[in-house]
Amino acid sequence: MIIEELLFRRRLDRQMTAMTLARVIVLIICGLPFICISLYQLNVNNNVNNYMELAIVSLLLSITASLMHTNFVINFYVFLMVLSRFRRQAKNVLIKKPWRLIKSLCNKTSTNISRNKVSPEIAQQSFSANELE
Image (cartoon, rainbow, N blue to C red; front, top):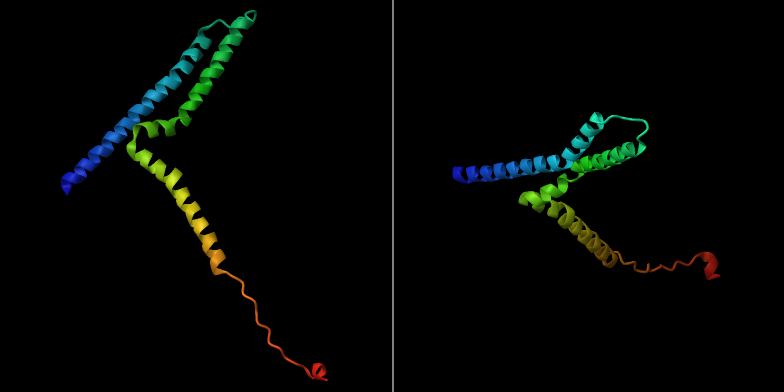
């Protein structure tokens, strides 16, 4: 019992280490170009007459800033690639639960149609004194 718990904790620790390593690698890949272009922009002489160089540096800065922002978006995909437990949870949340919900809604509508049939009401005839005359 204790050995199984230790093995389970080791697997979780291994997955946590893999997740952290993957996040650091993605952060370096996405952040390093932005840092390099920012440092270049700080060190370059901002000459007013050189519009082409300013435009190129601004374009590169915008592209690398976009790449830097993708760092925060890409977490989901990195975790899907690295962690098997995360893949199982994502599959459960994104595929199985909505599918069960759709099936239950379809089953409810089909059973409600067969269960809630309308039957004609049998009207009782009552004769009033005016009708009999």
